[in-house]
Length: 231
Image 1 (cartoon, one colour):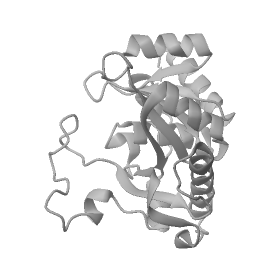
Image 2 (cartoon, one colour):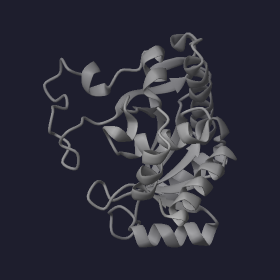
Image 3 (cartoon, one colour):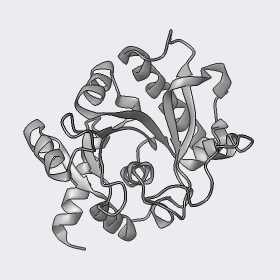
């Protein structure tokens, strides 16, 4: 592996461990999008503010598959199978071999509407605690703290992570596993205010440089993952 690639990915992992944002780009031949990514147990209301104003995409929380299973979070496509419009195999134009990672949309029970910055930060924080306990083999009672439908989209990572699927969900959870911290990461796509499309990679890199954030691509993360796999 190129030493610069190793250094970049390790810096991204260190930033995440320290509760800071990184900017995570997937692949030009996939979504071609950059996401804000931050560990969910570190999210505060100002982080939600930054994501909704400077990102503009959907604020979601990625969860390790083991934790999602113990928490009772199915894939949305499975939960909605009885409906006529449920996602089917091959429906995703940028990933024909996998279904989307969406699970349920939840609010923490201590929120009011669930949408303000304070509410979404609380939901993300408590999701992280439930993931932590589930990964330790002592899952909490999920229904005692959360309700669905809600305003935080949860994403369930593939159980083989980057070996099987290479979306933002798996990229973010792979980084958490490599870093040894709770595999629960809150992410949000960066959109362009002028074009109505995703922010270009070049513009996302410029934003990262201006704001002091590490920018890392899926190519680099996968290369590092291949050498240091942690499921």
